[in-house]
Length: 303
Image 1 (cartoon, one colour):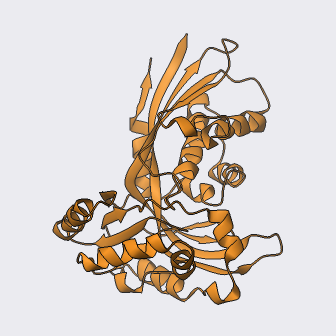
Image 2 (cartoon, one colour):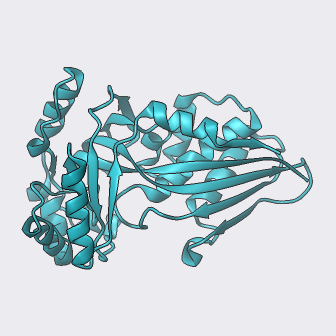
């Protein structure tokens, strides 16, 4: 018998700024970034049964993502281990819209949303800080995606400083068919690929002062390495510029590219031209922490 069902969106993210500052003693890279959630999202459905009525199940509409290593399954197991007492079985279903290996945090968002949703469904009352610590065991972007919105990221991604909401922006998003192997990319970085915190510091200062975002100052210092190792991403960037995009930036380690805009007409025209040129393209917009929290609550249905 099913006790409750909840549908929850798991939002994608973009990196408004990103710099790898250097390699740490633990093998990870020290990062500086401002992250922002956007409206493109996966959808998760959780059904909770009666205690002792069965085992957890998981299904995804992308067959290759349906295995036991999916971050949703791992998040469920991690939460059970954290609680340390029997919990009712969970049936999880995942509808994918965020491109896998796209630099948009899709899998990480699925994992973070799973932790938050099951904490609410089970009434566990786990603190945000502890949820972020658990999320850090599942991926570098996952702690940030526990709450999302606008935030500055430190460390390897596990240190999250919430920032005031940025001004609402339209996002023309394009994901080239050139999946980037993130771990391999970071292994290939050389000191020449490292950046500093200048762009991140400038963006944070503008956000804190409630000034308009300096769109032309957004920066991702991983772009040269990605463009060198995955030339199709560089070609996609060049095509967008040729199609009239005033500015193109890469999210995360790519391959997804985005064009921030204050004009729906501009964003829609870029997406129209990119789609006509054979690209996978979406019109999205920025999403705040409050909007994420409200969407998680509003999707709950008791049955």
